[in-house]
Image 1 (spheres, helix red, strand yellow):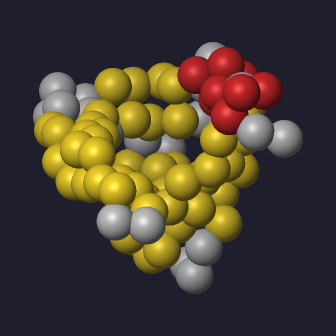
Image 2 (cartoon, rainbow, N blue to C red):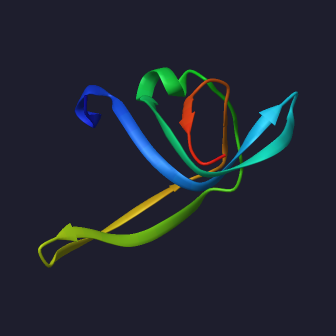
Image 3 (cartoon, rainbow, N blue to C red):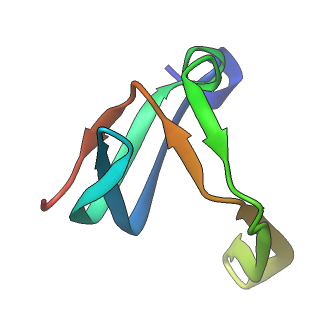
Length: 84
């Protein structure tokens, strides 16, 4: 499967488990994957802390500027993996 089919996978340095509305456990080196539209249906809260990061992407000496960013999200259901 691929992003063209609506599938994604990305990693983050850290994430938090939320239980009963409280952050309870730090998760390190987390990996989140799933189907884009299904995951969006499970977003329960969106933070007001939108930030963007810039960088470069490429290969064989060919680089293009890229960026990514998002506010913090609370997702009720997701496929998560990582070091714990």
